[in-house]
Length: 243
Image 1 (cartoon, helix red, strand yellow):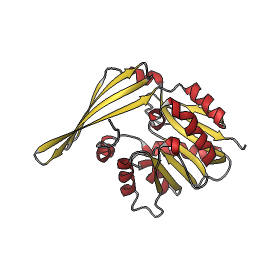
Image 2 (cartoon, helix red, strand yellow):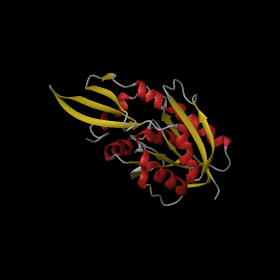
Image 3 (tube, helix red, strand yellow):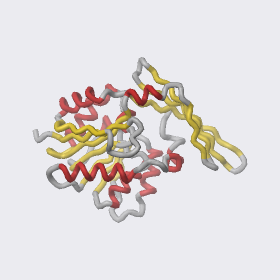
Image 4 (cartoon, helix red, strand yellow):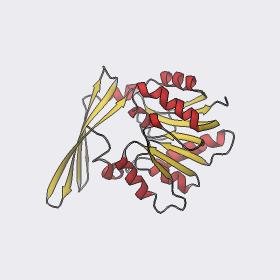
């Protein structure tokens, strides 16, 4: 069962409470603490591109990659009015392939949690290849404790045109939370039902740090106060080594 297909047209309406400007402020604060120019950025797992567009509006040149064509369609539509439109790439994170290096890459809103553990070494290897020496990789992560706390919970998101029901079950064998999602969208007097399944992996922060170090990243800076409220979310900023 796919994820971010039927949900894509509704994603922005269901996430209007996300403090995107706080994410952008945090990224810029990390740029200011670091050496070199930060002009060309990669938004990895960009989703519907809200942060891509926001960073572009702040003057950055943007490349945005995602594995969901439906989410990228929303992102391209959103960015159509920008003076310098981002370059959008339909790419899985483990197959990232850019034309050159970027000054920094970021992965926001659980993007890294969606990546299976066995793909992470290749994801980090490719990021090391495409982030310039001394450049940054920044991401946020839902903690294992937070994901486990969702086990058995049922959530409802509702607008006049959509009813979204999702159930969370923690799979100990996968070390992941599995969301079964039913979407009911209004079509005139009828309702269309769609289903998706989302899996977020409970990555241990120190294990991620070890994998990143092996891939060639250093200077790890963790934060649990980058945005407010954090809701079990932590942030890491690390630097690509110069080798």
